[in-house]
Image (cartoon, rainbow, N blue to C red; front, side, top):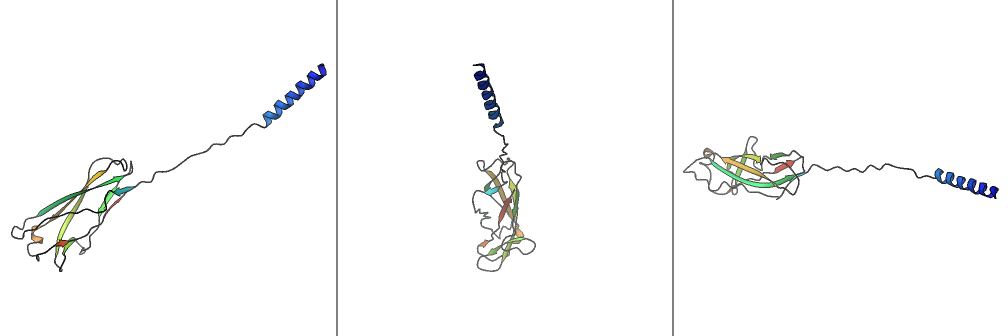
Length: 154
């Protein structure tokens, strides 16, 4: 009987040792992603209307409009206005829709002072412009227009 117990204990130890030899290994999994810095306007178009320019008055005319945008949290945006369709190499111009006369104008882009926190919190960009009285007093009657591309990049 002692022999049987000894064989049983020996067999049990072999079984335990072989189980320990088949222990599981480990692996460390790294999970990662990156958030892309993004800036977008909330609408595709805006209009800056200087209204009716009265040559008999000839004063400088200011105009203002706004549009909204958002940027990824922590992103610093860069805003820019293109030269427009009637750029003459030195200034932006609105062109007479039925002729060749042009009226120069300036633009200023001013974003609000809020932080960028993502698409859920729209920010406001104020677009201001000016037409000098001396630039429209001798122009042909009619409608003048230009098209300027605004860009926003992170």
